[in-house]
Image 1 (spheres, rainbow over the protein chains, first blue to last red):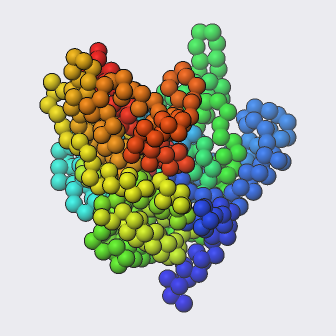
Image 2: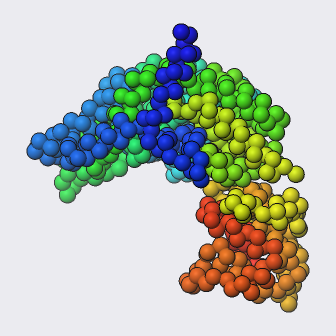
Length: 416
Length: 154
Ligand SMILES: Cc1ncc(COP(=O)(O)O)c(C=O)c1O
């Protein structure tokens, strides 16, 4: 059996694990193509969370009774599992947040406000999600440092021709591992050493890559890595910031409250050790249990296999949409499937993305219209809105065929 | 008629394909207001000239967006150009009522059949209410008109 046939048969069986994928929309089976915004979750994750709520729930890190201990164990086991999943050398370097946005805000607020001031510079790319732009702009407005930009070049790739000049004297490069609009996988293996050589730290927004391909933060060599649980089969309400211990230890707390202190008096407080220092208040307890179950599910299939499946599906989709719609369709981003993730930003000739998505919805097909929280990128692409179809392990070629047929319908509906 | 056919009536597609009063006016003398739909990136720019008698003597609409926001803007321009501010605000109130949106601080009053008849082409947008996310598209140009009128009267 070829590798392709193996993966195809494995993946064909996955849909049944996802209850929502058995439902209908407007009398049509749901074709869910919006996993880049948020994925769906399998029964295994839902059951694990239900079990935690029904048998092992109490607040963590506080009670001495057995139930509180069980909940604390489950929460800390999730941290261990997450650390192993991303190749973190030390599980204490894994901080649970509300989402990736909070994780990036933590870096910009705590590290940024301590280490950046007038005369300093950081480097971002115009390909970033607003979550990796606005927190830095907020810190820059307060602290007066400069933000330099790596712009978009050819074929959905960054223009790295002036990289050395941009990094010269910069203290931070904060960059997405994979664009949520173009699917572009950025060459971190080249960018991280270049940034370090220039004396800059690197913060990676890994929201779109951690769910879809193997991740090893130690091999990657980054200093901070942020991602969200809800895009990787886990629940909403939990995100992760991984950071190098040495940096985390030197940083001041982000949010203050219970759980993050070692002592409080009326004169002041002493922060607790990492990671508690950055986990103020009751954390996402059962969400962590759900995330751990999602990691178990992903690992059982294998991240390499998931990546391979999505490359094949993307290649099929690029071919199929071209066949079906010819020049009436534009798909942004790298033309080579192996250089991109399963995110297709689609423009249909003479039909606005909002209308495309509306017609697709009437076919049961869920895609996202708009600017995808990346307005600077959309401006550089010269488009105001695209309809974005994105794939995950539960999607198959039937979903792509349904998408292609629905796009054809949208096109003939609006054709002049 | 399916919900989708009801949403995209022929008259809407006609305004979308050949928008009325599209373009720009020089500011000043014209007043300009910009409206954005942060959800989908649609933009509407309304330019208008108000004379001393309170008549909208000229009006143009710029920007870009989906069929619903563009056709609604086109219909809006045709409905209020050459009319008084009072008339424009009256139509705005009826149209928003049709979209199930009450004036700030007021009870929602469903437009009467007579009022709906007076809306002319605009009544074709009534299918939009079944698609809550699209109501913002349909009302974007009206909110922008409102801003431009306030600006011109300031
Ligand atoms: C690349 C990227 N960064 C950041 C985010 C923000 O994630 P969240 O909304 O879960 O904080 C997203 C998700 O939309 C994303 O795609």
